[in-house]
Length: 346
Image (cartoon, rainbow, N blue to C red; front, side, top):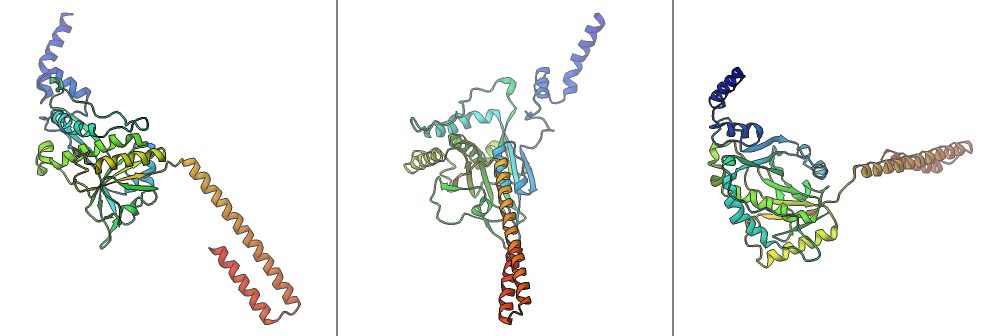
């Protein structure tokens, strides 16, 4: 027993020096049990920003099924994308950001009585416990992408990229009149949710990201200290699903509040950057496959009908040959056969 206690004592004496940057056993346990929390004085800490570089926009990572549906239907056509997947904020920095900036903005976006209640919002933050000081919170970005490797002289547009995704689009802080053009180097920040009730929380995610990147030095330090290539976007986009009538009500409610200057604490809406709200229908993959099978079956039936017509025409031509048909009759039959063959090829 005495030998066992001696071994434990030696280990306890060794732990602080072996842990390197960790000043106590408690801090060492906290960091090893929560490896995603990075110590501010840890020289081996991972980057504050995580990227996927030069990816096909249709194949960027998504965890949720609805997000995968949207990404899979995007039309990149002529360019690749660099995607910001997440960023980290020091917990101490979040207190003022949340309590003084984000929550006052959040409180301005009221519910629609008896019709629409937003999802639960951001909580007011309390003082960071000593055990969590120097740690970071990581925030995921649904699809914050930069257009890269675009063909020379080429431009694209939000309408083209989202052409198979969007059934309806509404400008939250502007009126959509022209095509929403993009070119190489432009960033587009996209948030995705399945219900209109999620609109407020998705707006808050854009608000948090915009405030952080607008005050980069305050939250992240000097840009040249990071492997950093993200910038504020040319467009904000929020893709929603759910009941179409609730989508319309939610969009109209936010628009009216904005136009009446009742959302003046929302910096991303007042940034001059256009924010587009889109309605994206949910597509069941099995339903899509059934539709494709039905269309293929219809095409097969049409081909069979054309083949029957060709066979009938050949028989008629044979009969005409037997009866010594005139040259005009033969020309007319040849034209009919050519028309049927073209239909078959198409």
